[in-house]
Amino acid sequence: MLECFEISGGTPLCGSVTLQGSKNAALPVLAACLLHRGKTVLHNVPDIRDTAVMLQIMEQLGCEIEKKGRTLIIDAKEAKQFQVDAALGRQMRSTILLLGALLGRNQKAVLPFPGGCIIGMRPIDIHITAMQKFGAVFEEQDGMLLAEAGRWDAQTILLRFPSVGATENAILAAVYAKGLTCIQNCAREPEIAELCCFLKEKGAKIQGEGTSCIWIRGVDVLQDSTYTLMPDRIVAGTYLIAGAATRGKITLHGIQMHNMEAVAELLRQMGAAIVCEKDTCYLDGRKAARPLECVCTDTYPGFPTDLQSQLMAALCIAEGKSRIKEQIFEERFRIAAWLNRMGAKVVTDGREAVIHGVKRLQGMTVEAQELRGGAALVLAGLIAEGKTQVYGSSFIERGYEDLAGDLRLLGAVVSRKTTER
Ligand code: EPZ
Image (tube, rainbow, N blue to C red; front, side):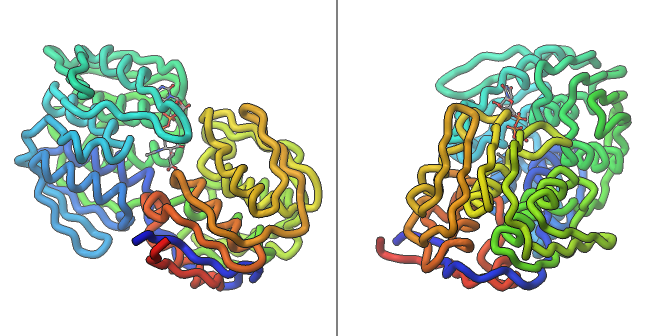
């Protein structure tokens, strides 16, 4: 049996939906719970595959976790294990976020070497270099990464690239490091500020979150705390782009628009009207047909690479030629081939893609091969005439809690099916 999303396209979206919690905030915050030898209550945790895997790993490390809907009660008091189960850990790259927490708590960590994925090699050299500065010594055995440290003192760390995950690992490692740690050239993604706010609620001493220089003064203990996670800005951006691409009118509730200025700016350049009131955003995409001369993905606050595929799908029916440059990952144009089979005209060359707008796309059977490309193919199905089946739904469900349900609330004709293919 195979699972797919089945979409009947051609209908402008019209409706409203409340956003899920942020996957890319939940994962580092869950890792951070391991630092505390006590209790944490987390609200608005998205119910997605990646958080489910992280919770299984945390239980295997000795955490007691009670789940009540999207609220988790985590007790990491007895989480004395520092070896991550290989089979569990290999299910997602974000396992690497346990490195800083396990070293920060135990000065020991054993975890599977995170492989690359279809969007790129995904190396971890910046993570390793940062942990070595704190005193960790690494070796690799049978695909496992072993790390151990004698001392664990504050450091000044300069990241060669503002890696999101490496910044998060350095922060987690610094919480208990004696003295004043300075992390320079930090990533500035909102999820990093969220991690810092979460840790400060627990008594960590952190300054500079949201800037490229973060200071952390080591503490001896953290406190029990309760925290509500931010909404998922990539899910929000996916829905805004879908509203514009289908020339619809949608409302998103529970949004933090100040984190999404780059996305809003591009949608306005396409001709969409966007109005925000507190945590509600209204998009009118009826005139969103203009092409975009050149879009470059970038680190925050630039246009996020995680929305690049969704934007490419939308630009397939813009009235003219658009250009996208993917500056973060080396293999993030793979959906172009599927879009072209649906009738699009996307020409890729290395990290550049030129999208010649066409009148319409034709629905067909396509295959998701990774999370955001899969969401983009569903978006293409919303635009296309006729029926589209997107297989590989498990990739999409790594990050979208209920994509079909949310899109139906926005007026789409979409369902999740199990078929004999
Ligand atoms: C985070 O991945 C996100 N994942 C990704 O979202 C997102 O695409 C990415 O940041 C960029 O914004 C989570 O937060 C769980 P990076 P991460 O380290 O931390 C290179 C999604 O769809 N690099 O900032 O792995 C790397 O190869 C996912 O939700 C090194 O060279 O991203 C890439 O080219 C996909 N060495 C660039 O930096 C390193 O040690 C950015 O990677 C680390 C990274």
